Image: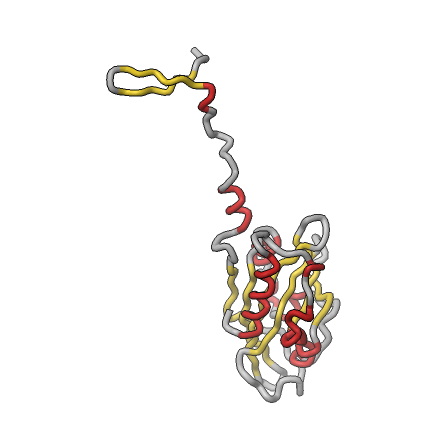
Amino acid sequence: MQNTTSQLLFKYWNEIRGTRMAPRRFEVEPARFAGILAETFVVECEAGEGHRFRLAGTRVGEKLGSELRGRDFSALFDIEDARDFGCFFDSITEKGGVGVITVDMPTATGRSARFEIILLPLVHTEERITRLLGAFSTCNHEPWLGSEPLLPGRVVNRGIVWPDGRPHVVAERMVQPSPFKQDFTLSRIVRSRRRLFRVYDGGR
């Protein structure tokens, strides 16, 4: 993530997350990031209902030239890019990854603006990640932004950042005992000359 807005929001999210996969939705205090609040949004993720904007800061709507509330997140991108978001969202909602997208969005008159989008998972209900806290910020100052609506854009770059260095579910599995681990309390040590053997009684 390159933009200051993305870095500030990630830092706040990571602080309240602690060692968990994601913080809870109601732990988020907008006053803690008031300086960038107008560039943030919340996306609702429910099975079978897509990923819809629930809230969007005033600056986001102004830059895009349209209201986002109730729209699907994929509507920001052209059809080819939008249909390829399934695994990307799974990495965020199931594994605790942080999504970072760079997108070029054009206007009908041929202008174009580049944006960075960050998506941070939040636990809302039923101990599942069903909300995303995000930010939508410009990569370059474009004085004309807001004077004409932006069209669906093309993804320049898209990636997942792992806050703990790896997918969270994998990290949890690594500390769990293996189902194939031997129970040494059922064995005995046998010495033969200079060698030691661990013997398990039973079988044929």
